[in-house]
Structure formats: structure tokens, C-alpha cells
Image 1 (cartoon, rainbow, N blue to C red):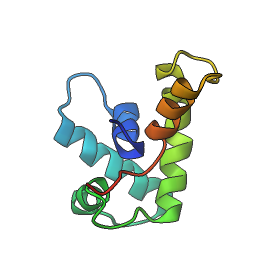
Image 2 (tube, rainbow, N blue to C red; image 1 turned 30 degrees about the vertical axis):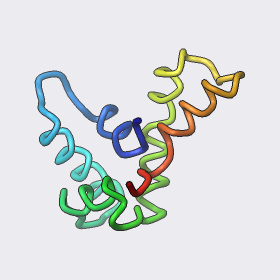
Image 3 (cartoon, helix red, strand yellow; image 1 turned 180 degrees about the vertical axis):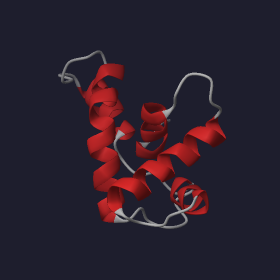
Image 4 (cartoon, one colour; image 1 turned 90 degrees about the horizontal axis):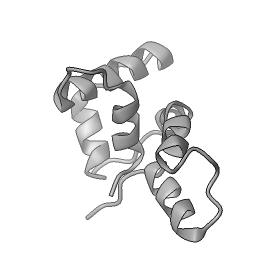
Length: 97
């Protein structure tokens, strides 16, 4: 299942770059926009739910990802429970497994 981190990576991923490069690009974008100094190590810990995603980073990811997530769910606001659950999952932090 996808989550807000996977969705944000999909948004910034450019053609021809691999997943690791896309993760680095996501962190660079977060740092540039928020004036922070996160590394991909933080991203890995957020992805594994070892550390919570800071609220300001989560807000940034949500603003960055919402259009992409809606498009992936058919391009319109979902009306049935399954579509709504899929959209919500794409915009939530990872669950600890």
C-alpha cells in the first residue's frame, strides 16, 4: 500500500531517475522550501515509521501530493468508500509494521 511518502516521491520523480535519486530530490525539495536540513536517513526512518514525520513536513508533503493522489484515484473526488480509503492511504503517514 502506498502512503504520503511514496506519493510525494512519485510527485517529484522525474523520468530517468531511480528511486534513490527521487528520494534525494524529495529531501532537497523539502529542505529548500522549509529551510530545513533533513537527510535521506530521516526519510527512511519516516518511511519505516521509526520516527514520526514532523507536522510541517507532513503538511508540505500533503500540499505537494494531493493533486497527484486525486489523479491516481480517477481525477475526481472519490464518492465510494473504497476510493476514499485509497485516497486517504496515499495521503497518510506510513504505518509501523
